[in-house]
Amino acid sequence: MASFVNKVVVVTGATSGIGRETAVRFAAAGARVVATGRSQERLAEVAGVVDLALTLDVTDDTSVAIATAAVLDRYGGVDVVVNNAGIGLFSAWEDTDIAAIARVMDVNFYGAVRVARAFLPSLIDRKGVLLQVASVAGRRGYARHTAYCASKHALIGWSESVRHDLAGTGASVVVVCPPAVRTPFFENAGYHTFDEDHPGLVTMTPGAVADGVLDAAHRRPDRVILSPRARALDVLNFVSPRLLRVVQGFK
Image (tube, rainbow, N blue to C red; front, top):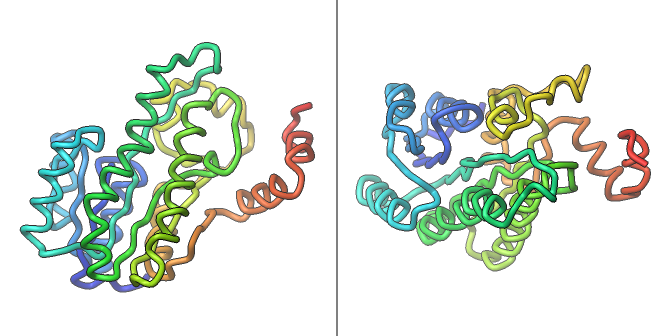
């Protein structure tokens, strides 16, 4: 495990799943971790293993401003920001109205942009790294995931553009794309038959994704797609989206 001794790391959505495991692992690697989330009760559960547990709602401009000011006042700057907060929505396009799409976009895309904009001046000053936890769903479409896929495609596009804007500053933008992860994500998104629809699929653990995030923070590649299977499918989608649909059983 790479060392992040005394590095200041902010993790959004750190109250469960990938975010919590990421916060815990950065702390174990010596970082001064700021774990953020909306639930004070869940933040209390992780407070004992991080340097600071801070309430943050990524959809609220005021909440982001207050949290940013608190972090910068306490530490003087940040070295790593992990934009992990996100929600899903399992719904066919005809059942997904504009309000539902806007809600997903506000968390997954605009929320990440709010946090990134707040901390980027400090990341530039300290030649830090912004890690955007996207998804393989930001690389291609999935049935009944229109809002979620749209939000992750937007996040990747924004992140890759910002990377160009930051050229020569020493700051980095890394896009991390996990495949399906064994968390309550699908249940919370309303996809209650995920396991039945994907028999035999081996999902990643939150810890494995967190390890990938730490490695990405250390190596700073432009983009990392976690798991060999996900990388192979991504290549196939690039070469022949039609063939990928056949492989996955779609006409």
